[in-house]
Length: 510
Ligand code: ADP
Ligand code: MG
Image 1 (tube, rainbow, N blue to C red):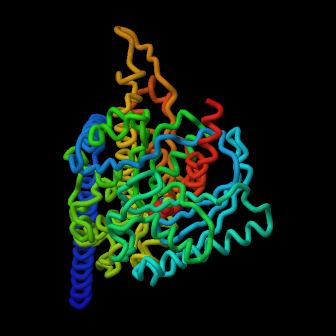
Image 2: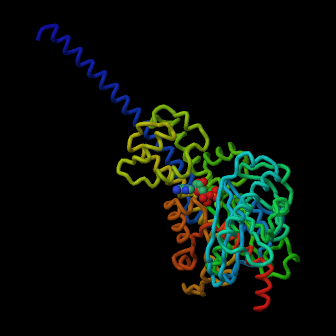
Image 3: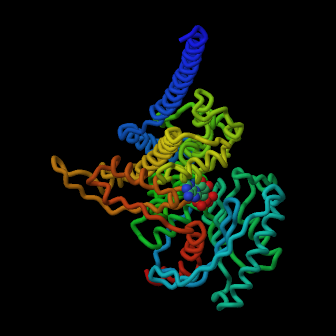
C-alpha cells in the first residue's frame, strides 16, 4: 500500500470512529432520555399507590367525614345536603308523569308512563343542547326557553297518545347544581357550576323560577319534586330493586347520595321526627382526606383550576379531569427526556387530551398500538412515537385510571361503612364470634355516568377494588348496578311517588 493508500485508509478509519462515537453518544443520550421518562412513570406510580391498606384508610375517612357533615352545618368538606326525600319509589306508582333534566350542556324533557308492579310502560325523551348564550343570560330567558321546549313536547306527546289523566300534570325537576333544599319540591341555588352563570338566580328559589315560567307560558303543570341527578339515579335503582340504598354518579363530575336514618342526621334533629329517614346528597366530589394519594400533577391541576381547593376528590376521579392529569404527565416526560422529540406546544393546552381519548389509548389492543400513535399525532401533534414509548403512554393512562377507579370504590365502601353495610358490624352485618360466617343483607348501589358505563378498564378496576376492600366473604352481597337515565326517569318516578294521588292511594292501602 502506498502512502496515499495508507492516508486514505487512516482517514476512513478516523471517520468511522467519529461516526461510531456520534452513534454511541446518541444512543447513550436516547437511553438516558428513556431512563428519565421511565423515572417519571415510576414516580407517578409511587405517587398514585392505592394499596388495600391505603384504600381502607380512605374508607374510614369518608365515613368519618360523613358523620361530621351530618353533625353540623359546615362540619366537613362533605356538605351532606338534606333532600327532604323521605320515600323512594316502590314500584306501585301508576300514571303519566313528566320530568325536566337540567344539569349540563344538554337538557332533557321526559314523559314516563307507569303501570304499577315496577313496570315502566313507556317513556319518551327529547334532549337538546342549551344554547350557549342562555347559560349566562337571565333566569327568565333560560326558563322561558326550557318551558317553551317542554310545552312543545307536551303538546306533541299528548297529540299522539292519550292526554294525562288527573287534574294536573306533575313534573319532577332534576337540577344538578348545588341547591339548599327547603322541601322536597323547593330549594335555593347556592352557586352555578359547569359554565352557567346567571347572577340574578343565585340565592333564589329554583322551583319558583320554573313555576313562574310555566305560568307565563300557560302550561298547567305542578313541580312536585326538585332533585339532583344522583337522587334520580337512586330513585330509579330503588324502583327496580328495593335493596338499593345508595347511588353514585361517575361521569363528567362525580357525586353520591344515600338513604340515611333520621336520627343520624344530627344537624336537623327535630325536623325529622315524623319520618324514618331521608336521602342525603353528599356532594362527595368535595371530599378530602390526607390519605388520598396526591401527586404534583394533582396539585398543579388544582392550582390552575377556577376552583382551587374545591372538589378535590372529583379532580382525582371524574371524566372531566383524568385526561388532563395524563396530559400533564406526558408533558413532564417530554420536558425531561427526548422520547417524544421536541416538546409539542399542544401539551401545554389544558384539557386538550379528553378522557375518552385516554380510554381509547388504554384499551388499544392492536399489536403496534396504532390508536395510541393516532391520538398522539392528531391530538397532541407528536408524530412518529416509537412503540416502546407508546407503551409508556398506555401505562400512564393505566396508573391514572386505576387510581381513580380504586378511590371511587373506597368512597362507595365508605358509604356502606357509614350505614353498617360493609360487613364490619353496624346494624345488620358482622362476623360471628370466632367464626367466619357472616350475616349480610343484600345491598345494591346504583351507578350511573359515562365514565363508569363506557370505560371498561375503569369499571373493572373499580369492581376489583370493591372485592379487595370488602373481602371475598362480604363482596358478593354488595352489587353495583348500572342504571340508565336515572336523572330523567328517576325525577318522573319521584314526581309519581310524591304526587298527591299516590300518597292518598297509599294511605288507603294502609
Ligand atoms: P354528564 O356527567 O355530563 O351528565 P355522562 O354521565 O354521559 O354525562 O358522562 C360523560 C363523561 O363520561 C364524559 O365527560 C367523559 O369524561 C366520560 N366518558 C364518556 N364516554 C367515555 C368513554 N368511552 N371512555 C371514557 N370516558 C368516557
Ligand atoms: Mg349526567
